[in-house]
Image (cartoon, rainbow, N blue to C red; front, side):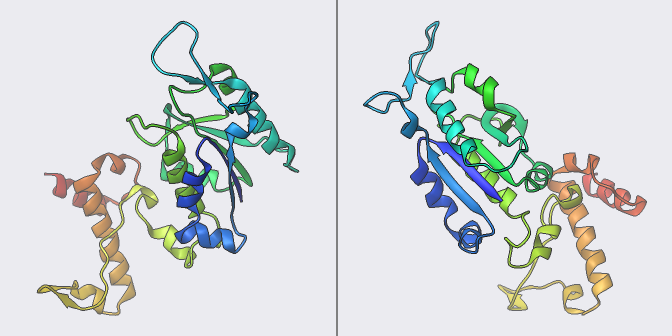
Length: 244
């Protein structure tokens, strides 16, 4: 997968994504992530990319042309004939989710557009953006952090990125349920013991216990997710008893 991030702060983006799991995936050639500096496409000697908004108002607005030229430079390097999705980080967009991460992970190319200041000239957004995406109902200084969050979540779904591919299948939000509690050595820590079922070696019973714990956790902490979960009648009764 090739990911291109249009930003005013490439060092910030690459500093975060070049470490840990995404960094290792880049080293192995499983992921290609580049941060493209929008300032490189400014059309003045000071490399400024912002100006005052028409009609007045607080703050400055990113101009259309540098953003468009940056996008064009990325597209000129593409060999694919398929329409490349351009994701604009905006609180006005659809809320990012695990399902969206799984969907986007199937793309060969993705472009992220990070706004700054008071936003970006609407005309270039209309020209190039395919998806408006939000990571929550709050406002950040720029789109870099949301883009990094999304890239991290999407990358985990790309085959070969995780050391153990099975781990991506049993995380929080899989089947609209939160992840079950997990334990490691020692068996007793601060007088708290690992649940005996996990020491039994009976895999069917362990999976049943884990599923029940996922239902219980979701009912306690994120009952809204249960509306999308496919539950058995026994699991529905279990969830109901937790919420009573």
